[in-house]
Amino acid sequence: MEFFGNYLLTFIEMGGLFSPLLFIFFHLMRPILFLPVVFICISGGILFGPVAGTLYSFIGITLSSLLFYTMIGWMPKSLQRLIHVKQKLLGKHAELTTSQVTLLRLIPFIHFHLLSLCLIEGSSSFKEYTKSSLLSNIPLAIIYTSIGGWISNLTPLYIFVFLSALLPCIYILRRKEIIIKWQDFFPIQEAQKHSSIKV
Image 1 (cartoon, rainbow, N blue to C red):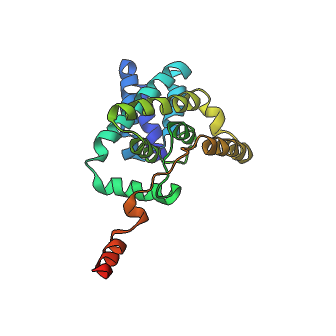
Image 2: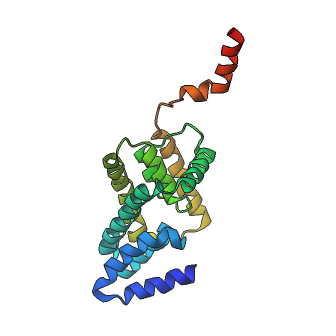
Image 3: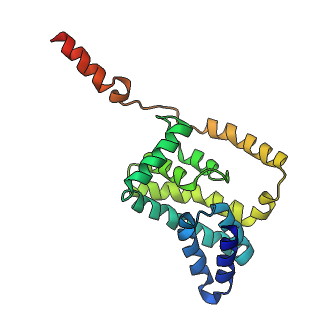
């Protein structure tokens, strides 16, 4: 898959004036090709430089987030799978704030669209989701495009220190309230059993 990614990036580089459009389109195709966001952002810095690469990566990542919002409603099985993974990792009632998602996006091995799902659950409308996506995508595009090569060459010790520094920030920026639905606290079957006993 990495070879295929390198081949596509070579194709983009030879695209001339259409290279930025091909690169942004490549961001949209990324989930289908199973390529990490980090790989594409770093490649954008190599192909276009830190400023233009950051801009193109930001546009591509944001369009990918908006496309995910539009398409996830059409794929109920994929949605349920993502919800199951989220509940397994974060707990059934956990809700992440935009600040937490922004920090988690900087960790390369966390699924990009799983975090987009967290933003959807914390947003009341498409407009609010779009705003949250824009805010959470800016640091990702800047850091991995500008100094992505430096981060990718870090030793395991430095990566561990970097992640250890991020974890307390994620905890501090957490949502301070947990909402538990009545049905989760009192299962419907239990309520029916009690009502039948009373009768």
